[in-house]
Length: 460
Ligand code: GLA
Image: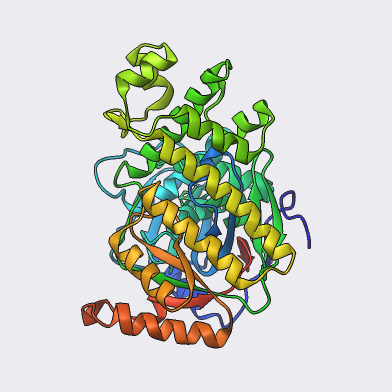
Protein backbone atom coordinates (compact mmCIF):
# COMPACT_ATOMS: atom_id res chain seq x y z
CA UNK A 1 0.00 0.00 0.00
CA UNK A 2 1.41 3.41 -0.91
CA UNK A 3 2.58 5.89 1.69
CA UNK A 4 0.35 8.75 0.73
CA UNK A 5 1.83 11.58 2.80
CA UNK A 6 4.32 12.99 0.31
CA UNK A 7 2.33 12.93 -2.90
CA UNK A 8 0.00 15.42 -4.49
CA UNK A 9 -3.76 15.24 -4.49
CA UNK A 10 -4.98 13.23 -7.48
CA UNK A 11 -6.31 15.27 -10.41
CA UNK A 12 -8.57 13.29 -12.76
CA UNK A 13 -10.92 14.02 -15.60
CA UNK A 14 -14.41 14.95 -14.51
CA UNK A 15 -16.43 11.74 -14.45
CA UNK A 16 -19.72 11.92 -16.42
CA UNK A 17 -23.01 10.70 -15.08
CA UNK A 18 -22.31 11.30 -11.39
CA UNK A 19 -25.55 12.83 -10.16
CA UNK A 20 -24.22 15.21 -7.52
CA UNK A 21 -21.42 16.46 -9.77
CA UNK A 22 -23.81 16.98 -12.69
CA UNK A 23 -26.25 18.85 -10.47
CA UNK A 24 -23.51 20.98 -9.01
CA UNK A 25 -22.30 21.88 -12.49
CA UNK A 26 -25.86 22.83 -13.49
CA UNK A 27 -26.36 25.01 -10.38
CA UNK A 28 -22.96 26.60 -10.93
CA UNK A 29 -23.94 27.67 -14.44
CA UNK A 30 -27.25 29.04 -13.10
CA UNK A 31 -25.49 30.90 -10.28
CA UNK A 32 -22.54 32.37 -12.14
CA UNK A 33 -23.42 32.08 -15.84
CA UNK A 34 -20.30 30.11 -16.78
CA UNK A 35 -18.86 26.59 -16.60
CA UNK A 36 -16.85 25.59 -13.53
CA UNK A 37 -13.18 24.93 -14.30
CA UNK A 38 -12.64 22.25 -11.71
CA UNK A 39 -14.25 20.41 -8.83
CA UNK A 40 -12.85 19.48 -5.45
CA UNK A 41 -14.10 16.53 -3.40
CA UNK A 42 -13.25 16.11 0.28
CA UNK A 43 -14.78 13.28 2.35
CA UNK A 44 -16.17 13.27 5.87
CA UNK A 45 -14.71 10.74 8.28
CA UNK A 46 -15.55 8.35 11.03
CA UNK A 47 -13.02 7.73 13.75
CA UNK A 48 -12.94 4.04 14.62
CA UNK A 49 -10.98 4.47 17.83
CA UNK A 50 -8.67 7.06 19.46
CA UNK A 51 -11.01 9.83 20.57
CA UNK A 52 -9.72 13.09 22.03
CA UNK A 53 -6.12 11.96 21.84
CA UNK A 54 -4.85 13.69 18.67
CA UNK A 55 -4.36 17.06 20.35
CA UNK A 56 -2.29 15.26 22.99
CA UNK A 57 0.03 13.97 20.25
CA UNK A 58 -1.26 10.37 20.11
CA UNK A 59 -2.29 8.35 17.03
CA UNK A 60 -5.86 7.85 15.85
CA UNK A 61 -7.60 5.37 13.54
CA UNK A 62 -10.13 7.05 11.25
CA UNK A 63 -11.46 6.18 7.81
CA UNK A 64 -13.06 8.36 5.13
CA UNK A 65 -16.79 8.21 4.37
CA UNK A 66 -18.82 8.24 1.15
CA UNK A 67 -20.42 11.49 2.32
CA UNK A 68 -18.40 14.48 1.22
CA UNK A 69 -18.11 18.16 0.38
CA UNK A 70 -18.06 18.95 -3.33
CA UNK A 71 -16.90 22.33 -4.56
CA UNK A 72 -17.23 23.70 -8.09
CA UNK A 73 -14.79 26.48 -8.91
CA UNK A 74 -14.00 29.02 -11.57
CA UNK A 75 -10.86 31.12 -11.12
CA UNK A 76 -11.37 34.82 -11.67
CA UNK A 77 -8.28 35.98 -13.52
CA UNK A 78 -9.15 39.66 -13.58
CA UNK A 79 -10.45 40.43 -10.09
CA UNK A 80 -9.64 39.43 -6.53
CA UNK A 81 -13.31 38.88 -5.67
CA UNK A 82 -14.07 35.72 -3.70
CA UNK A 83 -17.69 34.63 -4.23
CA UNK A 84 -19.04 31.82 -2.09
CA UNK A 85 -22.42 30.18 -2.64
CA UNK A 86 -24.02 26.96 -1.44
CA UNK A 87 -26.57 24.76 -3.22
CA UNK A 88 -28.48 24.51 0.06
CA UNK A 89 -30.64 27.67 0.23
CA UNK A 90 -30.34 27.57 4.02
CA UNK A 91 -26.73 28.70 3.61
CA UNK A 92 -26.57 32.29 2.36
CA UNK A 93 -24.05 33.51 -0.22
CA UNK A 94 -21.10 35.66 0.75
CA UNK A 95 -18.45 37.66 -1.04
CA UNK A 96 -15.30 39.55 -0.12
CA UNK A 97 -11.89 40.47 -1.46
CA UNK A 98 -9.72 37.37 -1.33
CA UNK A 99 -6.68 39.36 -0.23
CA UNK A 100 -8.33 41.27 2.61
CA UNK A 101 -10.99 39.76 4.82
CA UNK A 102 -11.41 39.03 8.49
CA UNK A 103 -13.02 36.03 10.15
CA UNK A 104 -15.07 37.48 13.00
CA UNK A 105 -16.37 34.89 15.41
CA UNK A 106 -19.48 35.75 17.40
CA UNK A 107 -21.72 33.72 19.72
CA UNK A 108 -23.31 30.42 18.62
CA UNK A 109 -22.60 28.37 15.50
CA UNK A 110 -20.44 30.23 12.95
CA UNK A 111 -21.94 30.84 9.49
CA UNK A 112 -21.00 28.14 6.94
CA UNK A 113 -18.83 30.39 4.75
CA UNK A 114 -16.52 31.23 7.66
CA UNK A 115 -15.23 27.66 7.54
CA UNK A 116 -14.39 28.19 3.88
CA UNK A 117 -12.68 31.48 4.70
CA UNK A 118 -10.55 29.63 7.28
CA UNK A 119 -9.09 27.43 4.54
CA UNK A 120 -8.48 30.39 2.22
CA UNK A 121 -6.78 32.33 5.00
CA UNK A 122 -4.66 29.31 5.93
CA UNK A 123 -3.26 28.98 2.40
CA UNK A 124 -2.61 32.72 2.13
CA UNK A 125 -0.75 32.77 5.43
CA UNK A 126 1.39 29.76 4.54
CA UNK A 127 2.36 31.06 1.14
CA UNK A 128 4.97 33.57 0.08
CA UNK A 129 2.77 34.82 -2.75
CA UNK A 130 1.46 38.36 -2.22
CA UNK A 131 -1.66 38.32 -4.43
CA UNK A 132 -4.30 35.63 -4.64
CA UNK A 133 -6.79 35.21 -7.46
CA UNK A 134 -10.50 35.76 -7.12
CA UNK A 135 -12.72 32.66 -7.28
CA UNK A 136 -16.34 31.81 -7.96
CA UNK A 137 -17.20 28.92 -5.68
CA UNK A 138 -20.29 26.76 -5.26
CA UNK A 139 -20.43 24.22 -2.43
CA UNK A 140 -22.56 21.11 -2.06
CA UNK A 141 -22.31 18.93 1.03
CA UNK A 142 -24.04 15.74 2.14
CA UNK A 143 -22.18 15.12 5.42
CA UNK A 144 -24.77 15.65 8.17
CA UNK A 145 -23.70 18.84 10.00
CA UNK A 146 -22.78 18.87 13.69
CA UNK A 147 -22.90 15.09 13.85
CA UNK A 148 -19.28 14.20 14.58
CA UNK A 149 -18.57 13.15 10.99
CA UNK A 150 -16.33 16.10 10.28
CA UNK A 151 -18.49 18.21 7.98
CA UNK A 152 -16.73 21.41 9.07
CA UNK A 153 -13.19 20.07 8.66
CA UNK A 154 -14.10 18.72 5.23
CA UNK A 155 -15.29 22.21 4.27
CA UNK A 156 -12.13 23.87 5.61
CA UNK A 157 -9.97 21.27 3.85
CA UNK A 158 -11.93 21.72 0.61
CA UNK A 159 -11.26 25.46 0.83
CA UNK A 160 -7.54 24.87 1.35
CA UNK A 161 -7.37 22.59 -1.66
CA UNK A 162 -9.54 24.86 -3.81
CA UNK A 163 -7.39 27.90 -3.04
CA UNK A 164 -4.03 26.23 -3.49
CA UNK A 165 -5.08 24.69 -6.82
CA UNK A 166 -6.53 27.99 -8.10
CA UNK A 167 -3.23 29.71 -7.33
CA UNK A 168 -1.04 26.91 -8.70
CA UNK A 169 0.63 26.20 -5.39
CA UNK A 170 1.98 22.69 -5.40
CA UNK A 171 1.28 21.44 -1.91
CA UNK A 172 1.47 17.76 -1.08
CA UNK A 173 -1.24 15.98 0.90
CA UNK A 174 0.66 16.19 4.16
CA UNK A 175 1.16 19.94 3.87
CA UNK A 176 -2.48 20.48 2.88
CA UNK A 177 -3.61 18.46 5.90
CA UNK A 178 -1.37 20.44 8.24
CA UNK A 179 -2.42 23.80 6.84
CA UNK A 180 -6.10 22.79 7.00
CA UNK A 181 -5.75 21.69 10.62
CA UNK A 182 -4.17 25.00 11.65
CA UNK A 183 -6.69 26.94 9.54
CA UNK A 184 -9.61 25.54 11.47
CA UNK A 185 -8.25 27.18 14.60
CA UNK A 186 -9.38 30.52 13.12
CA UNK A 187 -12.95 29.42 13.87
CA UNK A 188 -11.99 29.07 17.53
CA UNK A 189 -11.75 25.29 18.11
CA UNK A 190 -8.36 23.84 18.85
CA UNK A 191 -8.70 20.46 17.11
CA UNK A 192 -5.79 18.07 16.86
CA UNK A 193 -5.63 17.51 13.09
CA UNK A 194 -7.22 14.07 12.73
CA UNK A 195 -10.11 15.20 10.53
CA UNK A 196 -7.96 17.09 8.06
CA UNK A 197 -5.31 14.34 8.00
CA UNK A 198 -7.78 11.64 7.02
CA UNK A 199 -9.50 14.00 4.56
CA UNK A 200 -6.30 14.09 2.52
CA UNK A 201 -4.56 10.82 3.37
CA UNK A 202 -7.44 8.33 3.25
CA UNK A 203 -7.19 5.33 0.94
CA UNK A 204 -10.04 3.18 -0.25
CA UNK A 205 -10.43 -0.14 1.52
CA UNK A 206 -8.51 0.53 4.73
CA UNK A 207 -8.54 2.69 7.82
CA UNK A 208 -5.46 4.82 8.49
CA UNK A 209 -3.29 4.82 11.58
CA UNK A 210 -2.47 8.53 11.73
CA UNK A 211 0.55 9.59 13.73
CA UNK A 212 2.03 13.03 14.27
CA UNK A 213 5.29 14.82 14.15
CA UNK A 214 5.88 14.12 11.34
CA UNK A 215 2.38 13.43 10.07
CA UNK A 216 2.19 9.87 8.72
CA UNK A 217 -0.66 7.61 7.66
CA UNK A 218 -0.23 3.85 7.76
CA UNK A 219 -3.00 1.76 6.20
CA UNK A 220 -4.66 -0.71 8.56
CA UNK A 221 -6.68 -3.48 7.01
CA UNK A 222 -9.83 -4.08 8.99
CA UNK A 223 -11.06 -7.65 9.58
CA UNK A 224 -12.48 -9.04 6.35
CA UNK A 225 -16.09 -9.47 7.45
CA UNK A 226 -16.26 -6.43 9.72
CA UNK A 227 -18.94 -3.89 8.88
CA UNK A 228 -18.97 -0.48 10.54
CA UNK A 229 -22.39 1.05 11.09
CA UNK A 230 -22.87 4.72 11.83
CA UNK A 231 -25.98 5.81 13.70
CA UNK A 232 -26.81 9.45 14.18
CA UNK A 233 -28.38 10.27 17.54
CA UNK A 234 -29.91 13.34 15.82
CA UNK A 235 -28.79 15.43 18.73
CA UNK A 236 -26.62 18.06 17.08
CA UNK A 237 -23.33 19.17 18.57
CA UNK A 238 -21.40 22.00 16.95
CA UNK A 239 -18.04 22.16 18.68
CA UNK A 240 -17.48 25.77 17.64
CA UNK A 241 -20.73 26.85 19.30
CA UNK A 242 -19.70 25.96 22.88
CA UNK A 243 -16.44 25.84 24.78
CA UNK A 244 -16.73 22.15 25.78
CA UNK A 245 -14.12 21.00 23.29
CA UNK A 246 -11.57 23.70 24.09
CA UNK A 247 -12.04 23.08 27.83
CA UNK A 248 -10.88 19.50 27.35
CA UNK A 249 -7.84 20.71 25.41
CA UNK A 250 -6.97 23.05 28.29
CA UNK A 251 -7.42 20.33 30.92
CA UNK A 252 -5.09 18.00 29.02
CA UNK A 253 -2.42 20.68 28.61
CA UNK A 254 -2.54 21.75 32.24
CA UNK A 255 -2.47 18.14 33.47
CA UNK A 256 0.54 17.46 31.28
CA UNK A 257 2.39 20.56 32.51
CA UNK A 258 1.75 19.66 36.15
CA UNK A 259 3.16 16.16 35.66
CA UNK A 260 6.16 17.63 33.79
CA UNK A 261 6.82 20.02 36.67
CA UNK A 262 6.59 17.18 39.19
CA UNK A 263 9.37 15.45 37.24
CA UNK A 264 11.65 18.49 37.39
CA UNK A 265 11.13 19.43 33.74
CA UNK A 266 10.63 22.87 32.24
CA UNK A 267 6.86 22.45 32.25
CA UNK A 268 6.11 25.07 29.59
CA UNK A 269 7.68 22.83 26.98
CA UNK A 270 5.23 20.04 27.73
CA UNK A 271 1.64 20.61 26.78
CA UNK A 272 1.16 17.28 24.97
CA UNK A 273 1.29 13.96 26.79
CA UNK A 274 3.07 12.29 23.87
CA UNK A 275 5.95 14.82 24.06
CA UNK A 276 6.21 14.32 27.80
CA UNK A 277 6.20 10.54 27.43
CA UNK A 278 9.03 10.77 24.94
CA UNK A 279 11.09 13.07 27.16
CA UNK A 280 10.62 10.83 30.19
CA UNK A 281 11.36 7.81 28.00
CA UNK A 282 8.62 5.73 29.58
CA UNK A 283 5.77 3.59 28.27
CA UNK A 284 2.15 4.68 27.97
CA UNK A 285 1.35 2.44 30.94
CA UNK A 286 4.03 4.11 33.03
CA UNK A 287 2.83 7.59 32.13
CA UNK A 288 -0.68 6.45 32.99
CA UNK A 289 0.46 5.38 36.46
CA UNK A 290 2.36 8.61 36.92
CA UNK A 291 -0.74 10.65 36.01
CA UNK A 292 -2.78 8.56 38.41
CA UNK A 293 -0.34 9.24 41.25
CA UNK A 294 0.49 12.89 40.61
CA UNK A 295 -2.87 14.35 39.67
CA UNK A 296 -5.50 14.62 42.37
CA UNK A 297 -8.93 13.14 41.92
CA UNK A 298 -10.89 16.30 42.75
CA UNK A 299 -11.16 19.28 40.46
CA UNK A 300 -8.34 21.80 40.55
CA UNK A 301 -9.16 25.47 41.01
CA UNK A 302 -7.34 28.26 39.24
CA UNK A 303 -5.45 29.08 42.40
CA UNK A 304 -4.41 25.42 42.89
CA UNK A 305 -2.85 25.44 39.43
CA UNK A 306 -1.06 28.79 39.60
CA UNK A 307 0.41 27.83 42.94
CA UNK A 308 1.66 24.42 41.65
CA UNK A 309 3.14 25.93 38.51
CA UNK A 310 4.36 28.99 40.43
CA UNK A 311 2.99 31.52 37.99
CA UNK A 312 0.74 34.56 38.07
CA UNK A 313 -2.90 34.36 36.99
CA UNK A 314 -2.23 36.36 33.82
CA UNK A 315 0.65 34.10 32.80
CA UNK A 316 -1.68 31.12 33.24
CA UNK A 317 -4.28 32.84 31.06
CA UNK A 318 -1.75 33.56 28.33
CA UNK A 319 -0.23 30.10 28.38
CA UNK A 320 -3.32 27.94 28.48
CA UNK A 321 -6.54 29.78 27.81
CA UNK A 322 -8.22 31.02 24.65
CA UNK A 323 -11.03 33.52 24.22
CA UNK A 324 -13.75 30.99 24.95
CA UNK A 325 -12.01 29.29 27.90
CA UNK A 326 -10.78 32.40 29.68
CA UNK A 327 -13.44 32.10 32.40
CA UNK A 328 -12.79 28.46 33.31
CA UNK A 329 -12.71 27.97 37.07
CA UNK A 330 -12.68 24.20 37.62
CA UNK A 331 -10.25 21.81 35.96
CA UNK A 332 -10.72 18.05 36.06
CA UNK A 333 -7.18 16.95 35.32
CA UNK A 334 -6.86 13.35 36.43
CA UNK A 335 -9.88 11.89 34.67
CA UNK A 336 -9.04 13.66 31.42
CA UNK A 337 -5.43 12.47 31.49
CA UNK A 338 -6.42 8.90 32.34
CA UNK A 339 -8.86 8.81 29.44
CA UNK A 340 -6.25 10.06 26.96
CA UNK A 341 -3.63 7.55 28.08
CA UNK A 342 -6.01 4.57 28.32
CA UNK A 343 -7.55 5.42 24.95
CA UNK A 344 -4.10 5.59 23.36
CA UNK A 345 -3.30 2.15 24.75
CA UNK A 346 -6.58 0.94 23.19
CA UNK A 347 -5.59 2.36 19.79
CA UNK A 348 -2.38 0.32 19.91
CA UNK A 349 -4.27 -2.81 20.95
CA UNK A 350 -6.89 -2.30 18.26
CA UNK A 351 -4.25 -1.98 15.53
CA UNK A 352 -2.34 -4.99 16.89
CA UNK A 353 -5.53 -7.04 16.76
CA UNK A 354 -6.21 -5.94 13.17
CA UNK A 355 -2.66 -6.87 12.16
CA UNK A 356 -2.84 -10.27 13.86
CA UNK A 357 -6.33 -11.18 12.54
CA UNK A 358 -7.80 -10.73 16.01
CA UNK A 359 -11.46 -11.40 16.63
CA UNK A 360 -14.29 -8.94 16.24
CA UNK A 361 -15.31 -9.80 19.80
CA UNK A 362 -11.95 -8.54 21.10
CA UNK A 363 -12.14 -5.38 18.99
CA UNK A 364 -15.66 -4.79 20.28
CA UNK A 365 -14.46 -4.88 23.86
CA UNK A 366 -12.11 -2.00 23.07
CA UNK A 367 -14.93 -0.04 21.42
CA UNK A 368 -17.12 -0.45 24.52
CA UNK A 369 -14.30 0.54 26.87
CA UNK A 370 -13.65 3.61 24.76
CA UNK A 371 -17.25 4.76 25.03
CA UNK A 372 -17.39 4.16 28.76
CA UNK A 373 -14.27 6.23 29.27
CA UNK A 374 -15.53 9.04 27.02
CA UNK A 375 -18.79 9.06 28.95
CA UNK A 376 -17.46 8.82 32.48
CA UNK A 377 -13.92 10.17 32.51
CA UNK A 378 -14.04 12.57 29.59
CA UNK A 379 -17.70 13.57 30.06
CA UNK A 380 -18.23 14.24 26.37
CA UNK A 381 -21.10 11.85 25.70
CA UNK A 382 -24.81 12.63 25.58
CA UNK A 383 -27.83 10.69 26.91
CA UNK A 384 -28.90 9.90 23.32
CA UNK A 385 -25.47 8.54 22.45
CA UNK A 386 -25.53 6.45 25.61
CA UNK A 387 -28.95 5.15 24.64
CA UNK A 388 -27.70 4.09 21.20
CA UNK A 389 -24.64 2.43 22.71
CA UNK A 390 -26.90 0.67 25.25
CA UNK A 391 -29.14 -0.73 22.50
CA UNK A 392 -26.03 -1.88 20.60
CA UNK A 393 -24.65 -3.56 23.70
CA UNK A 394 -27.88 -5.51 24.29
CA UNK A 395 -27.76 -6.63 20.67
CA UNK A 396 -24.19 -7.85 21.17
CA UNK A 397 -22.55 -5.08 19.13
CA UNK A 398 -19.59 -3.02 20.40
CA UNK A 399 -20.20 0.67 19.81
CA UNK A 400 -18.86 4.04 20.84
CA UNK A 401 -19.42 7.71 20.21
CA UNK A 402 -17.32 9.00 17.33
CA UNK A 403 -15.88 12.47 16.80
CA UNK A 404 -15.89 15.11 19.48
CA UNK A 405 -19.12 13.91 21.16
CA UNK A 406 -21.72 15.89 23.14
CA UNK A 407 -24.15 14.63 20.50
CA UNK A 408 -23.69 13.38 16.94
CA UNK A 409 -23.07 9.77 15.96
CA UNK A 410 -21.99 6.40 17.26
CA UNK A 411 -19.87 3.95 15.30
CA UNK A 412 -20.66 0.26 15.81
CA UNK A 413 -18.74 -2.82 14.77
CA UNK A 414 -20.77 -5.69 13.29
CA UNK A 415 -19.36 -9.12 12.48
CA UNK A 416 -20.90 -9.53 9.01
CA UNK A 417 -23.10 -7.84 6.45
CA UNK A 418 -26.10 -9.85 7.60
CA UNK A 419 -25.42 -8.95 11.22
CA UNK A 420 -25.19 -5.25 10.29
CA UNK A 421 -28.56 -5.39 8.48
CA UNK A 422 -30.22 -6.93 11.53
CA UNK A 423 -28.52 -4.40 13.76
CA UNK A 424 -29.74 -1.48 11.66
CA UNK A 425 -33.24 -2.94 11.88
CA UNK A 426 -32.89 -3.17 15.65
CA UNK A 427 -31.84 0.48 15.88
CA UNK A 428 -34.83 1.51 13.79
CA UNK A 429 -37.18 -0.42 16.08
CA UNK A 430 -35.68 0.58 19.37
CA UNK A 431 -34.42 4.10 18.73
CA UNK A 432 -35.63 5.78 15.57
CA UNK A 433 -39.27 4.64 15.53
CA UNK A 434 -40.15 6.70 18.56
CA UNK A 435 -38.79 9.93 17.06
CA UNK A 436 -41.08 12.39 15.25
CA UNK A 437 -41.78 11.26 11.65
CA UNK A 438 -40.35 14.41 10.12
CA UNK A 439 -36.89 13.62 11.36
CA UNK A 440 -36.72 10.22 9.74
CA UNK A 441 -34.82 9.59 6.57
CA UNK A 442 -33.31 6.28 7.58
CA UNK A 443 -30.70 6.07 4.87
CA UNK A 444 -29.04 9.25 6.04
CA UNK A 445 -29.16 8.59 9.75
CA UNK A 446 -28.19 4.94 10.12
CA UNK A 447 -26.01 3.26 7.52
CA UNK A 448 -23.16 0.83 6.98
CA UNK A 449 -19.96 2.32 5.62
CA UNK A 450 -16.63 1.19 4.21
CA UNK A 451 -13.33 3.10 3.88
CA UNK A 452 -13.22 5.55 0.97
CA UNK A 453 -10.40 7.50 -0.66
CA UNK A 454 -9.27 10.99 0.34
CA UNK A 455 -9.51 14.39 -1.36
CA UNK A 456 -9.54 14.57 -5.16
CA UNK A 457 -9.71 17.18 -7.88
CA UNK A 458 -11.73 16.75 -11.09
CA UNK A 459 -10.75 19.02 -13.93
CA UNK A 460 -12.64 19.47 -17.18
C1 GLA B 1 -12.83 16.76 16.65
C2 GLA B 1 -11.47 17.36 16.38
C3 GLA B 1 -10.43 16.27 16.21
C4 GLA B 1 -10.46 15.32 17.40
C5 GLA B 1 -11.89 14.83 17.67
C6 GLA B 1 -11.98 14.02 18.93
O1 GLA B 1 -13.29 16.06 15.54
O2 GLA B 1 -11.50 18.16 15.21
O3 GLA B 1 -9.16 16.85 16.02
O4 GLA B 1 -9.88 15.92 18.51
O5 GLA B 1 -12.79 15.91 17.78
O6 GLA B 1 -11.25 12.85 18.80
